[in-house]
Image (cartoon, rainbow, N blue to C red):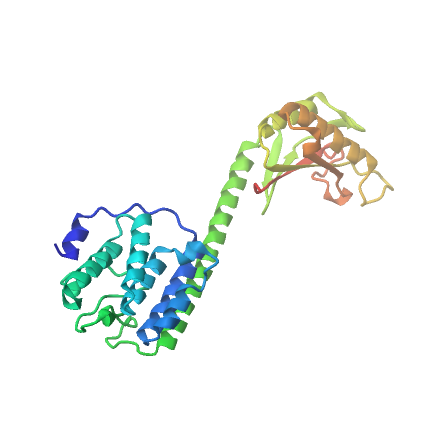
Length: 326
């Protein structure tokens, strides 16, 4: 049965999520090792394959292990090649490349190099265009095909240039991966803020969506004087508190405001606005079940008052900032 026929009958292994950093390091390792092997320096190829010997995720990576087996085979070290391919099959039982390599080792031992080559072709891994070449009479017939540059018909013989190009490709992919991760994180954050803004919107409030937070502004004053909540003010805070119930990963800051008083300071906050923030936080805590220590309170600057009238500015605003779980 040829490798093509085998591939048609083999069900591909399910692909699991892989760490992008590990995948890129493994790709760089095999690119450098393959370039060294093509230039004839098999010792350098093995050194490259062991470059991350403190990182088993890279040294035991599927592509790294497969290329290590091929390099050992090309050096005539069939026992080592067999060990690597068996390790690969232990971890990936349906790996066609490892199965084909072991089959050729067996044929080589029984009949010599010509029979070991056979007609089978096996798949090429990404960034590792490595094949078994016919035409020699020793174990060194396990050769490495040169990867062709895109858009050309001639092999690239400058192994250093191949390695540099491969490294640039990997770095570019790593940059793109980071940019994709940042964009996905930003998209998740935006959706979370939009959802939060909708969920805390209650009658008698205006919800303002900021870059990293959601601000709840009450349409009317909540206090009659000093820090005494009106009946309507208490009801408005209770309704908002119910919407905050169960939200652990959320920073809640309550800012107290005051009406403008003639000849009073225009900035610096006030004791009265701080009392109002504390009273509102207590009401929110009672309604949400969130401990009072789960709220931060502060006096807002007078110039940051949310309304134009004194009565409406006897109030608080509530700033909600989603927190990333540790």
